Length: 390
Ligand SMILES: [Zn+2]
Ligand SMILES: [Zn+2]
Image 1 (cartoon, rainbow, N blue to C red):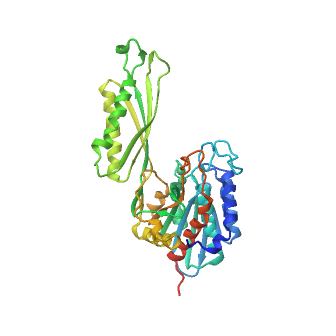
Image 2: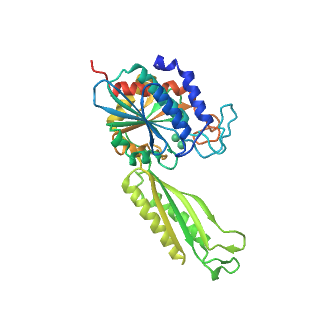
Image 3: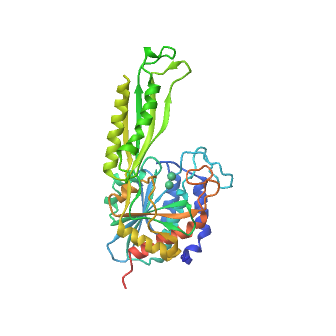
């Protein structure tokens, strides 16, 4: 393993930053303390700081030499709105908020790289350190793009990194092309005619309609999507009724749809609407369908991901970098950035997973052992993408 010595030397300090952030988790667009923590350190190292993009976003800009090239490195800062069940002394002090996805570690690793690059300056060009809010659920990355990230900070490429506890420490994984699916949400409100459950023929029983509808929606993937394309339609929420002997008047379904290709996404959306409304109609009920496209799918630029692979190999060795890792049906709002400029998003191993403590598990904790690996990766990526002229 070729971790940068200078970074390894402040491993303990990076760990203390990470644990400080873990103790004080903040959720979407409320990352005020975290943003101040990041901005203060960047300023201490002589990095220009811009705050306030997407409310709590922070962009640090570091320029060395005369080359006009600029690249962006992105870390996410937000915690999840969930309770932590860990017992260690740096556990969350905020009820109902928890760094359950390791964004505390992502922030600490990018800070570590920023410090090293500011102190050594062994590159020629401009690097923007992008600390984004609200990655979970509400697309803070998309808001940064809408509020002018690429106009205020022009760059030719953007890079992302996420820890993966199901990959061992010392491993990297990535793939060119489609890497993470789009994430769409849907809601269906079914209305019939509520009645006494002993006289069902006097009403319109939407519980039976909902049952048929949930099954019929499963044919979108199994019968209407090419077997060679990936897609998911999951109904995750069913709510309606109040007691044993009343057929309800209204019933709600919610769920998520995932895919990679625009044509598959279009097909899911139109099929879902058609199946929901026509199933309801078949029984004399109605269905209102809402469909929201939340995160676009994430596609890695082949050239940029090839550079990332070389950098990762130089750190952990050729045998520990999977350059053709399988894509995932999860999503990341980094895709709003990589849809605008060539982008590359890689996974860094943070395992092993112990007792099912994967991302978003209430007993998950970021593995501090990978802090210098991730920071070294970021630092070497900058030195190789913005090489110093001889
Ligand atoms: Zn997450
Ligand atoms: Zn995450």
